Every structure is written in structure tokens, then in C-alpha cells.
Image (tube, rainbow, N blue to C red; front, top):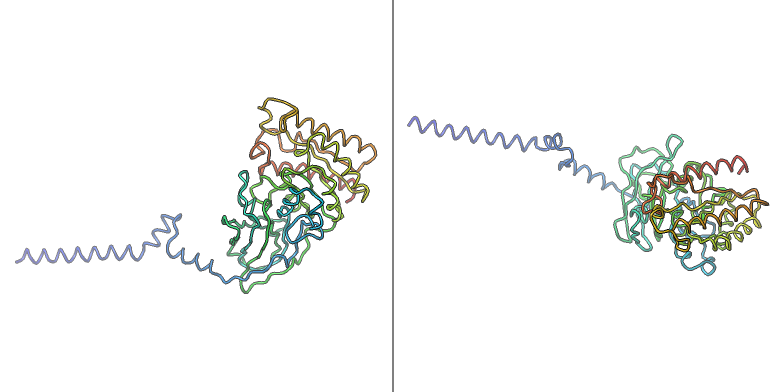
Length: 399
């Protein structure tokens, strides 16, 4: 009898003890999990994150705000006017619909920024990130400098919506939104808190009077920076606070006068011609003098910068043949033609300047993504050299 009572009592104690252990883990499991396994979101944290994402948002058409980096008389987010359709080559016209170099300036006090956009083509270039080709990046002006905020990542379809940032203090900021480099935009909207404000910029910051023109190749268009704001022309725009118009046409930078005819409608303060990598020596000798003469006929005081082609990384290993595009001898012939043209023109025109390619992106063969197109390091090095030249010209010409 006594043994039976003890046994029953022992079973009851075990049940109580087990219940207590289960209750303890039930009650304190989320705290233990978050403390010892911080990489895993607890249910409570997930609920809080969901609440933040569910903040009521109003979307505003970006075309109602200040668009910069665009020629006069162009449609929203396109780079050449409709009047050029039958005057430029078909590939150039198609590429002009890519929004490379175009930015939106706006002010807002929102705690979140969302972007909603519709792509024309939803392209997937193999040598660049989706954010570069068809995404956007955002900067805010802080402490007298443009600071990177975040990116709008494309989701793989034509219609996209992305949260760029959340949880900001609700103070007014000046923003710069950079558009995709290798796709076009049919619709672009900026999302903010329902009770926040958004408007055209309250401070100019970036001078849009007499912009800088970049006319060039796929590298000029932006290949292959990791996001739109890291191209050499975008870096110049932010560092100099000067509007820049990107007329880079992938594979089609041929020093064509027809492109410059439209560029000159913006009354540029400086024109940088970076077409050498796409142009054979014969094309350079044929097209470049006509283009420079046209610029001078409109404004003979506009500074013009010519940039040589870098030697492609793979050219150091290929059998050399000056008749084959991309070999060392072919590139040397391109640069030779550029230099000869410069030497002839500079005899009578002191507003033409020349940048050698020797130190443009360094000599360590680490500045391209595929042997040709600049990675972030290549774009930054090119930016530094081009910016230095622009500052010299500014000092010399007073632009």
C-alpha cells in the first residue's frame, strides 16, 4: 500500500515537472531564439516587419517631378526626340529609348520610399546586373554630398514594385533617383507614406543650365557598373553637381554628326566624345572632323574632349592582327586616327582636348567585367581622370 502511494506521488511530480518545462519553453522560446539565433526572425519580429511593409502608401507619377539628364523635346525617359527617328540609324533610335543617365529630382519627408515601374522590354544582358540594366538606385543629399540610399530591384517581369528604404525619420530630404541603363520606362511612380509630402526639389543642387554631354559607346551607356549611379558620367553628375546627358549607344558610338546635331540643342557647356572603342580608324577619320566642325559652327567656344580606347584585357593574349576588331594593333590604329585628327584640328581650335587611355582605368587588368566593359572599379578610375580634365578645362575656359 505504501509503495503504491509513493509510486503515484512520483508520477504526479514527473507530470508537474514536465508541464513546467513545456510551459517554460512555450513562454520564453521566442526570447531564447532571438538571443541565440539572431539570424532567424522570430514570429514576433516577422509580424513587426509585416506591419512596416503594410504602411499605407500613395504613389505619384514621377513625370510630375523634375527630370534631368535629358535633351530638350524628348518624351519622358527617352534620350532622343521623335524628330530624330528617321535621321539617325535604326539601332541608335532603338537604344535611345533606354533611359540611361536620366534621373528624377524630388523632395519628400516620407519614412519610406517605394518605386513602381513598367519596363519596355525587360532585357537580361549577360554582362551586367539586373539592377544596372532595368533597376533603379536612389541618393539623398546629406552633409553637402549625395549619399547612396538603396536600390529598386526588378522582379523579372515588365511590371515591378520595390521597397527602396523604410524606417527613416520623417524629415524633408532632397532625392536623386537614377533610372535603368539598358531598358526603357513606360511608367514610373514614387511611393511614400500616405500622410507624407512629396514635391519638386526645394533646392536646385544640380545645375541644369548648359549640361555636359557624353556621347559614346556601351561603356558610356553604363556597361557594366553594378547599378545606375556608379557609371563614370553619373559620378561626375553628383561630384560636380552638374547635369550630365548620357548619349552612350551600345555598339553604335560612331562620332556621328547626326547625334551631335540633337546634342547641341541643349546648349552644352562641354562635350565629351568617347566613341573610339566602337569606331574603326577609317570611321574616325571620316566622321570626327565633320562632327567637330558642326559643333564649332554652332558654338566655337564649346570645349570638346576626345578619349582614346583602352586596350582590351584579352588583347594581350590574342594573336595580333590589325585587321581584326579588338586586337592590340586594331586598337592602336583607332587611337592613332583619333590623335591625328586631334593634332590637325587643334592647330586652329584651342578648345579641343585629349585624354590618353594609358591610365584611364589602371594597368592591373582588374577594371573590366569581361575584358572590355568597365566594372565599378573601371568606372571610378575613368571618372577620376575625366573629372580632373574637366576641372582643368573649367579653369582654362571658365565654363
